[in-house]
Amino acid sequence: MDFREYIENNKIILLVLPNETYSKVIMDIVRKLDNTFKGISYVNMNNLHSSLMKKFKENNINENNFFFVDVITKSTMSDFKEPENCISVDSPSNLSQIGIVISEALKEGDFQCLLFDSLSTLLIYNKGSDVTMFVNSVISKARTFDTIAVFTVLKDDTASNFI
Image (cartoon, rainbow, N blue to C red; front, side):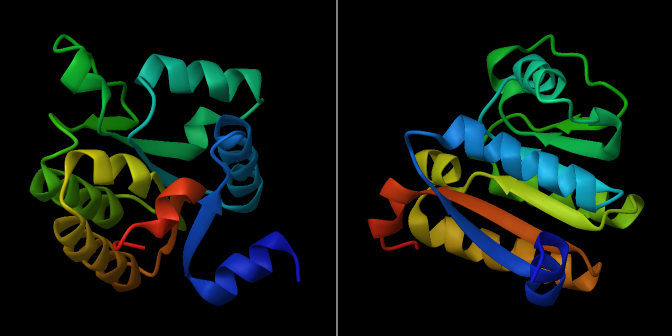
């Protein structure tokens, strides 16, 4: 079974990534998604937008194939100017705002895939029980809009009650 077939058959996927090679592995996943799907909504919780775009360029990933829900940049750079293919959220602890922005993105865009990078980061800013409810809501939204959802989590976080 190839990558596309696996993802399309499963629709909701949790990828457990190694802590040591996370940055490389996530870019490998992003590249595969970029080569597989036309429209991808990327929920970015780990990199400033400029850093993520630099990584995309270094890895020959077409940023125009993505719409970004940026959850981290605005909390560190209040003067951040959103590019056309990005909506930023004020804080990674504001699950309601993140959920609303994801809903709007899925409703307005033509996305085959939603990549959530990462649940581990979400758990730093929120209680596990709140993250569980939030993830259930995101999964429901993905199903409503017939969008494949790919969630990532660090291997070291799989021992938590959340996972």
